[in-house]
Amino acid sequence: MENDIKEVLLTPEQITAIAKDIGTQISKDYKGKNLVLLCLLKGSICFMAELMKYITIPCVIDFMAVSSYGSGTESSGRVNIVKDMSTPAENMDILIVEDIIDSGNTLSFMLQYFKAKNCASVEIATLLNKPSRRKKEVPVKYSGQEIDDLFVVGFGLDYAEYYRNLPYIGVLKESVYSDTEE
Ligand SMILES: O=P(O)(O)OC[C@H]1O[C@H](OP(=O)(O)OP(=O)(O)O)[C@H](O)[C@@H]1O
Ligand code: HPA
Image 1 (tube, rainbow, N blue to C red):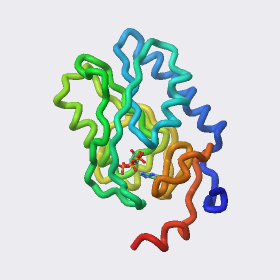
Image 2 (cartoon, rainbow, N blue to C red; image 1 turned 30 degrees about the vertical axis):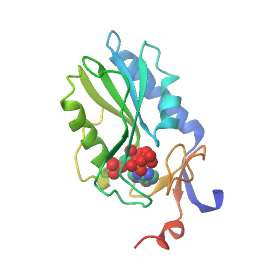
Image 3 (cartoon, rainbow, N blue to C red; image 1 turned 135 degrees about the vertical axis):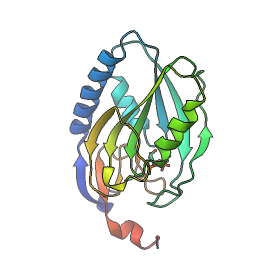
Image 4 (tube, rainbow, N blue to C red; image 1 turned 60 degrees about the horizontal axis):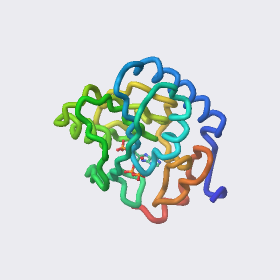
């Protein structure tokens, strides 16, 4: 697994520092609100777990599973809901917790999805942001680290479902996927 990584982009310590900063800000901004931390499975599982440790106000957590990447490195553009949240979203302040924003397809779909739900608010917190790849603009309230157009894995992020268990964010060597993708 380690041999497939070209470069480490964020160490576990750097990820923790980002989670602390964003968690502290969320704790201030959402005081007195009905905060729901909504983890988008599967990629956001590690960031969600790290971020929530640094949120010091009452909140509930929930999970949705959506998927659009199939087994490759390009978004199919079609976002599928694999699992819906279990908390009623009405009148709640939904904070979508994301691992990465790339094309923006996933979050654009999610914002559209919540429009019909009468939420008090819907915002986005992401660990990683690749603005150069954007196809659909989405408003991002909390952004950890901007990165170049590189395919990254680890700390929840996958390539073909693998590498999620790396404890850091690393750049995947092109040779790993160039053989299997056109
Ligand atoms: O901005 P976008 O181009 O939509 O890309 C971002 C999304 O892609 C990945 O999810 P994926 O669909 O691969 O599912 P996963 O979380 O289960 O890995 C990632 O976790 C984000 O949710
Ligand atoms: O760079 C990435 N890595 C893993 N999953 C992703 N989904 C969108 N971009 C990425």
